[in-house]
Structure formats: C-alpha cells, structure tokens
Amino acid sequence: MKIDLTYQDNDILVVNKPAGISVFPEGQETNKTLIDYLIIEYPDLKQVGLAPRYGVVHRLDKDTSGVLLVAKNNQSLDDFQEQFKDRKVYKEYIALCQGVISEKSGRIETLMGRSPKDRRKQKAFPLYDISAKGALRNAITNYRVLQNFENYTLIQVILETGRKHQIRCHMAHINHPLVGDKLYGFKDAPELKELSRQFLHAKTIKIGDSVFSADLPDDLKKVLDNIK
Image (tube, rainbow, N blue to C red):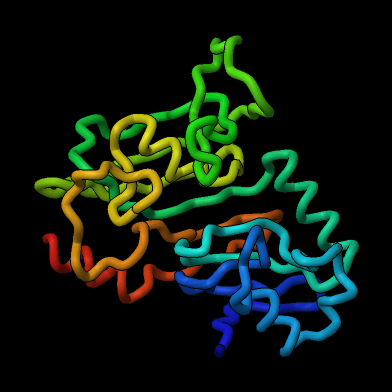
C-alpha cells in the first residue's frame, strides 16, 4: 500500500489516511493496519511510544479519511498528545448527515460512554444524568451547516473533545446520523449506492503554529456531485 504522506520533518509524519484501513490493531483486527505500512517505510517508529500504536498521536475510525498525525520520536509524541489532552488542537471535519438541519449552526454537549445495549457503539448521555453508569466523559461537538440538499445536510464539524466515534454518536443523538453509517444510522435510511462508508473526512488539524489539511477524497466528492 502506498502511503499518502503530505508532510514530514524530524518530529512528525502527516498522513492523508484513506478510508477502509484501521490506524492500528484493535480488537480482532487481523489485516495490516496503517501503522504496519508506516513501520515498513519508517522502521524507527517501533522505538516511539508503545505497541500497537507506536507513534500514532490520535486515531481515526477505519472508514474515516483525512489528516492523521504520527510522531517520529518520544518527545514529540508526548508534546503532541499533551496538546490534544489540553484541548489546544483545532480539529475540523466535513460530514454529510441524514435529513435537513434547519439551524445554521449548533453545539452538542453530553456525557459519552460505551452503549450498554451494543458494546460496539458509544452512547450520548445528558450532562445531568446521574443514573448513567460506567466510565462517562464530557464530549463537545460544534457544527455549522455548509449546504442543505433535499434529504441531506453537509456540515463542518469542529471538535472540542476527541471521544471515540464522537461525531457519529453525536449526530445520531440529534437524529441526523451520518450518511452511510451502518452502525449509528437509521435502519430504514435510504442508501447511496456509490457510498461504501460513512461520509466523514478529517479536513484540517492545527497544532501549535502548524496547519495540516487534506482535500475531500474523490469518493466523497462524487457523492456530493450526484446529489446536487
């Protein structure tokens, strides 16, 4: 597999991750992951961080494309992860949702944790829900409508936190799940034949004084062209 590397220096690799590949092994993963391919090209990554993540600073879901940061040394890994932890990183995504969102923008703030009914999923809980059990963490998603279509809404998403499946879970929580999302989407939602994954792309990350971006990939551009 050829890695689309958009930038590198002594401290960081910036990858334009394709959809359809896991970032690092999780659960029962048996296929080669992105970090496996990176280690072939950059074997020193095995000295960074701990297996199986090694230098991966943050994660993207298997079927999410876009900007991914990989540290090339332990000092950089610690520095980058500290900035993510302290919410000093700007993270912007592009997503296509089911239904028409009438307001121009919105903010979703909930507690989030593993769904008690389906362990593959995350669940949003009200901030005041003291009855919720398990390890719950605050999750904040901001969104802005870019374009409305007849049955869909294209949005820009800016995350304040970085919980697993956060965008997918939060948009489903407000009844606008991502188009193509088989885990969080509505069972009777119309399918777009040309889309084989959820419509979610990590467009931009700003960390410190550096800004890294990745254009919308061709499969998602085609979807938009076809519904316009």
